[in-house]
Length: 184
Image (cartoon, rainbow, N blue to C red; front, side, top):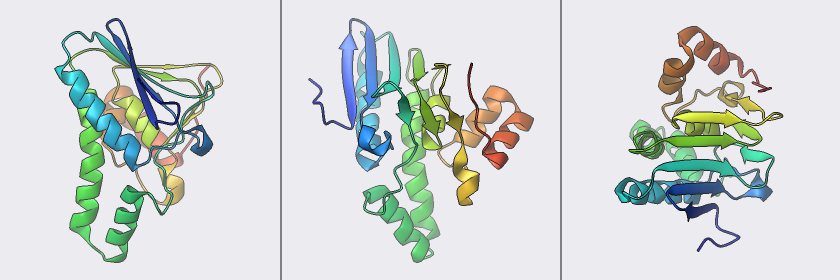
């Protein structure tokens, strides 16, 4: 049974599984624990032959996720900052590869996956949504790959997935300009 303070809440209703990002005080930013739980849930879901679909959304109703939690004390970010400081290219590549593998597991689940984008959806959350088979955004949602504003690029496989979804020209525009998408 999910606990109210779990960063990701998993529940099942019949043959439908739900994962809710539950860090409203951090705008549902995805920290190392979220990624660990998502990895574990994907393994569990992949092996559960009763599940017919997965829906990922955020709690509360107006926040999907602000993307990766860049708090310096988060273990993933701390490791990445240390690797940058040490000029440890292997450590950086391995760190990003760990996150990419979680997103890839989600993309490879053997049933339909839906990102129910219920509000703010930035950076790594856009990549998470892009790994789902279907993305549904409510009116008022804001979607943005803001990495360019930080001198970065989407690094969890988002550049490849986005290009496949909307074509190279539009993908480059969104990645390079950090333009916000405001669904109707």
